[in-house]
Length: 155
Image 1: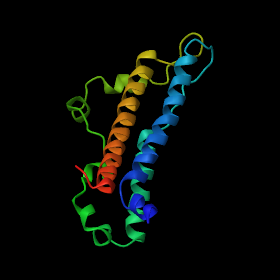
Image 2: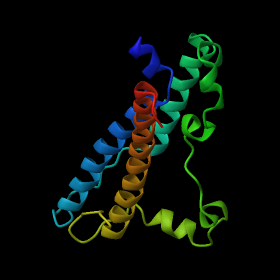
Image 3: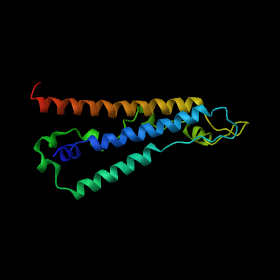
Image 4: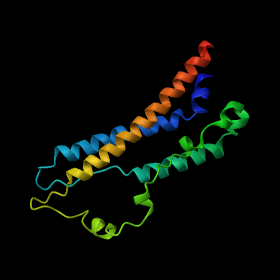
């Protein structure tokens, strides 16, 4: 009974987001730890590939099972932003930046010690990853609070 309750909500999706952001944080922290290691090449887990896999898994689960709104009428009013999970784009990302080609050509540039890590880029990626992690945990926390409130039958 509880298993179907948790599976019919966004909790499995949010659990996957938290697991991915934890793993990605470890990889990005490893890049920062090796910033002065000669010959070290930066590694990363692709958030775009993760989001695509998450979308396909979500689409497959929707096709497999019966309509969630028929199972539980209270779930049909759920926010689509959480289940679709598309990060917001800034105005700069929407507009074509004039130096984007230069920035892209410098991504694989090595320093004199054959290290390609940019501290600024790594810190920015860690910050974005941290925000995504906190967002998923906040939504999970609110869903657990709601569940606790429903079980205790108190507001």
